[in-house]
Image 1 (cartoon, rainbow, N blue to C red):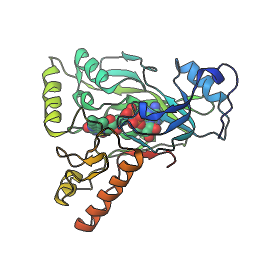
Image 2: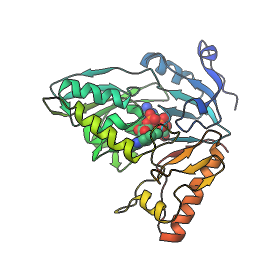
Image 3: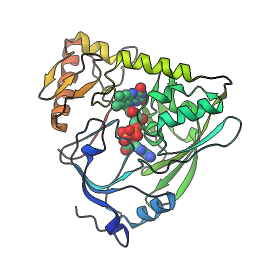
Length: 297
Ligand SMILES: Cc1cc2nc3c(=O)[nH]c(=O)nc-3n(C[C@H](O)[C@H](O)[C@H](O)COP(=O)(O)OP(=O)(O)OC[C@H]3O[C@@H](n4cnc5c(N)ncnc54)[C@H](O)[C@@H]3O)c2cc1C
């Protein structure tokens, strides 16, 4: 769509940046404009420079994103390596910006004697992504710990919002207003004296035993339907190991789809559609994707 940007941003952004470099599935066409802000003031100035008709997308570590092969028209804002302030603000309160990596948050909380935050250790994304997804594991969920969030809008306006302003459920967060993105959160934990690093190790080992960690995936592709496990439904539909081109249903965990190296987003999307159709045919259950599918084919 030919995004025109005024001033220094015209030269600082990356144009046609392949998003396969920024997603854990290693697929995805180009971002028309890719921007990694230096800090909050830089981000606000950039947002003000983006013309109102240009779509804006956000990306953290791309660990829950399927970007189609035609890429993303408009602007992609990446928080990777930036907006990464992480501070203990009170006895049980933690302030973390959206670019903080979840594993880092888990480590800091353990060091500060706060918890339970161990579950964050296994989520390979940023806090911004975890807020958008209500990411969780082993019984813990991101929004259980959110008191307030700070957001920014297209005009670069920063707002504080209480957690109660959001409708939060399993892997779903409905915001009170469109086009407001997370820049930080005030989180609260319990005092948990003693060392809990052993618990992180145990959780990571459990994860490694059950999931194809280290292979190219986006974690669980589908959410669990109420009272059921997506992985069990997929496995009992006979789909474990089912392969389309270079994409396959993981042999280790049927709710993971692996890119073995050469798969394109279209292959992954076709495999997702096939799994959905088969599970519906065999079990009469419609699976909903957890992974966010964006971009043009
Ligand atoms: C091996 C593996 C294991 C995983 N295990 C788990 C698990 O146990 N539990 C779990 O919940 N998830 C899991 N995931 C999925 C993923 O890590 C989480 O959903 C994570 O929270 C995504 O964070 P991200 O920074 O990578 O977000 P991205 O994938 O970059 O983005 C996800 C969504 O969040 C939006 N977003 C990102 N940043 C912001 C922001 N600042 N403001 C507003 N919106 C934003 C994006 O636009 C997109 O819609 C796993 C993934 C992998 C690869």
